[in-house]
Length: 254
Image (cartoon, rainbow, N blue to C red; front, side, top):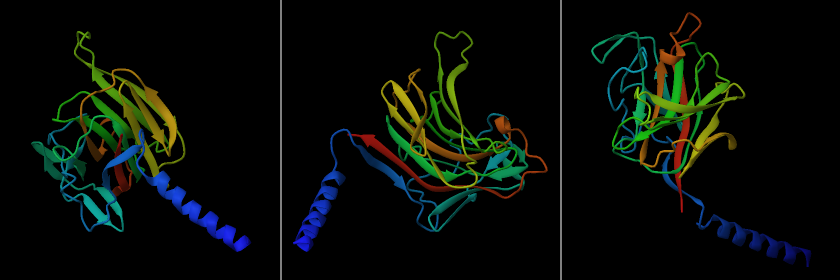
């Protein structure tokens, strides 16, 4: 009798698991996924360059298409202290940026990356969103970390206030101090809905905003910058430095 009941419970468990796995109203449904399982970056999903090909924020790197290495399910964006020519002048560092512009964009949803960031003065890894077709602002920064403080995450929403006579952008930024995010892989996500953005780190809510929430389709960017807000590298910075990415996933609410 015990064996029969065990078999019944086992069958019910399988049925219930199947039912819960089905799509239900209000559930997040996967719309984009890259697990980086192949031997090289998937160009059908990503373009391995800066969409503008221009210097910004007083950064020191030039973006090159061969800054990407993909092995055993991990994509590495590698920054090296080697010169390259970029946007009209010589740069002392070379690194990588990839985006989904003209390949994938979405208005609202959940956007998530699982990654490990590099440590080092002057390094600036980021995962962010911009409008499609490409423009600025708005901008949603899901993840920004400065290499000299890899236990602090910055999460921002940028916009232009038409009532601001200077025309300068405005923003709201949250900060979260946690573990050293260079020591292991962690997830960073936003849940973006009409009128609200929520930032989650390792599945826990760490910041939210209802200010000037974008309502246009946006594409994804992942990059490793040098300098700018992160300031210049110094003798303590070790090169090459890798921004390691396990996956990028996007869902929408049905």
